[in-house]
Amino acid sequence: MAITAGPRAWRRTAALQGASFTVPFFLGFVLFSVVPVVLALRESLFTQRSSGLGFGPKTIEFAGLDNFLRGLADAKFWAGMGRVGLFAAISIPLIQVVSVVMALLLDAASRRVAARFRLPLLIPYMIPGIVATLIWIYLYSPDVGPLTPFLALLGIDADFYSGELIWVSIGNLMAWGAIGFNMLIVYADLQSVPREIFESARVDGASELRVAWSIKVPMIRRSLVLTTVLSIIGTLQIFSDPMLFRSMTPETVTRDFTPIMAIYDWAFAQGDFNYAAALSIILALVVGAASAVFYRLTNKAPTS
Amino acid sequence: MSTATAARPRTRIAVIMGLVAFAVYSVAPVWWLVVAATKSQADLYTTNGLWFAEFRLWDNLRGLFTYQDGIFLTWMGNTLLYGVAGTAGMTLVCVACGYGLAMYRFRGRGVMMGAIIGSFLVPGALLTIPSFLLYTDLNLVDTPWAIILPSFFSAFSVYLAKVYAEGAIPPELLEAARIDGAGEYRIFFSVGARLMSTGAATIFLLGFVGSWNSFFGPLVYLRDQHKWPVMLGLYSWLKVKVDNSTDLTGLVVVGSIISLVPMVALMISLQRYWRSGITLGSLR
Image (cartoon, rainbow over all chains, first blue to last red; front, top):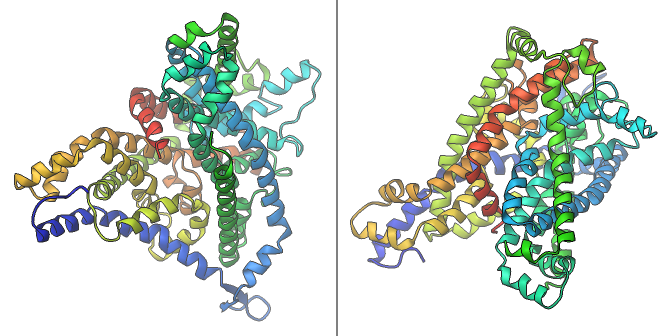
C-alpha cells in the first residue's frame, strides 16, 4: 500500500487524485482501442448490397453471421492463413534456437569480448524494418544483388523470388532483424543468474555444453516464453515484408498472400469493409488461440 | 571473467568463431547498402556488390534531394514531425498513467491493469480497418493527426512506466512530501517525474523507434504523398519499377541510407536507455 497514514477522507482524496493521472490515457485508450473493436464487431454484422443492376445507390443491410460464414469458407483467405501458420511454425522455433545459442555464446565469452561483439550483433535491430526488407530484396535480386552470382559460382541456381524460396527469403530477413534483439533479452536474463551456480557445476566436472543445456536454458524459460508469444503475434500478422516483395514479384506474392494482405485488399481495393472487418475478427481469434495454446503448452512442461 | 578462464581453449575458440560468423551475417547487408549508395545506377548492376566502384555518392545525394522538387526532404521532415510530436505526447500521457497505477490504490485499478495487459494480445490488424472508419467519421483521414494522435496511447509504454515507477520511487518519499503539505499533482511534478526521468527517456526512445518504423498505419490513413513518412515514400519508389519502366533503384538505395542515419545516431548516443528498456521489458 502506497498510502498508509492520515485521516480517511484525506486519503480518499489522494487516491482520487492519483486515479486522475490515469484519466488521459484511458480516455484515449477507449477511443482508439476499445471503440474500434466495437466498430469491427458491428461492421462485421452488416453487408452492402447494390440495388438494381449495380448502378443504384448501395444499401446497408443486417446480415447476421453471413460475413463470418463466408470468411470461414473463404479458401483463399485460409490458404494465406495456412502459409503464414506453417511459416510461423518453422521460423519462430528456428529464430528462437539461434537467439538462445547466440546468447549462450555471448555469455560463455568473457565480458570484454562480449562487449566488443554487442554493437555489431545489434546493428540489425537499429535498422528500420522497411529498410531491412529493402536491403534484402536487393541482396536477393538477380540483377543487383551479390547472392545469386555467388551461389552460381558454387553451381547453385537459386531464385530467391520464386514460389519455392520466397518464404525462406522472408524468413531469413525476419531472422536477421529479430535475432539480435531476442538474443539481448535472453543475455540480460542470463547475466542476472548468480555465476557461482555455473562454477560449482564445472567443479563437478560438467562440460560447457552440459552447463548451458542443463542449467542456463531452464533459467531463461520465462524470457523465452515472452519473446515467443510476441513473435507469434507479430508473425501471424505479417504484412509489410510480403507487401514489399510483391513489388518485385507480383506473380509469386499474390494480393491475398497473407491474411492481413487479404484483409487490406478486401477493404481498400474491393471496398468491402464489412467483410474485411469479419476477416479481421477471425484473424484476431486465430492469433489469440495460437498464443493461448502456446501458453498452455509451456506451462504444462516441467519447470526445472 | 571467471567463465572465460574456466572454459577450455577449444571451447573458447569455438565461441569466438561462432560470434564472428554471426557478426559478419549481421553487418554484411548494411555494408552492401553503404557500398551501393556510393555507386552510379549503372555500376550497381555491373560491379561487385561488396566493394566500391567509381565514387558517386555526392551525385546520388544530389539526385535524391532534387527528385520531384525534393519530396524526399518533405518525407524526412514528416517522419521527424510524427516521431517527435507523437512520441513526446505519448511519453507524457503514459508516464503519468504508469505513475498513477504504481503509486495509488483506487477502485477500478485492477480492471485497468487487466485492460492494459489484455490489449497486448489484441492484434493491431484487428484495429486498422475499423480505425479507418472511425478516423473517417472524426475527419482525421489524410491529416497528420491520424498518425500523431493515436500514438499517444500506448499500453505497452504504460506498462513499462508502471514497472519503472515501482522500482524507482520509494512510497515513503511521497508520504514525506504529503506530510510537508504538498498536493498530489505537485508531488508528481517535483518528485515523481524527476525520479522517473530515465524511464521516461527509455519509453520515449522505444516509442520513437516504433514510430520511425511504422508502415501499415500511414499506408492506410494517408493518401497525399506530401504527408507521407519516409518509409512509405521509399515503398512507393520501389513499386514504381513495376508500374512503369522507370527504375529508381539508385534513389531507393541512397534514400534508405539517409533514412536510417538519424535513427542509428540516436540509438548509439542513447544506448544506455534502450538497453535498460530491453531489460525492463523482460522483467514481467
